[in-house]
Image (tube, rainbow, N blue to C red; front, side, top):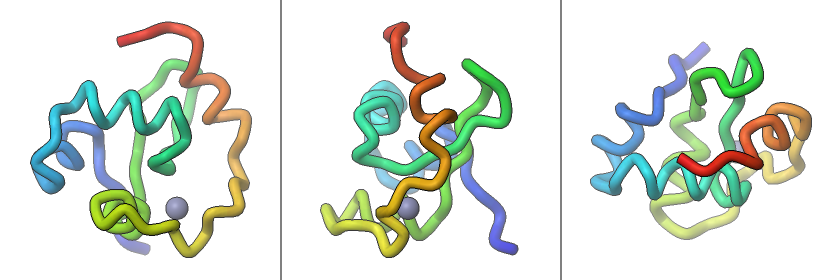
Length: 76
Ligand SMILES: [Zn+2]
């Protein structure tokens, strides 16, 4: 299994600001998962690559809606 990236790591790789990453995660433009509500986001490298290239990710079908919803509602 490929290690997933934290937001800080993803921001570094993508050269975007981490707030931009959080907004993309919350808008579901970028896929990420949270182990617990309001916990640390983890991002699949493939999803990050797709987001940077402005492509739709291979597994665009969201499987972890609960985690996405949990990340919304409070702005960073
Ligand atoms: Zn994805």
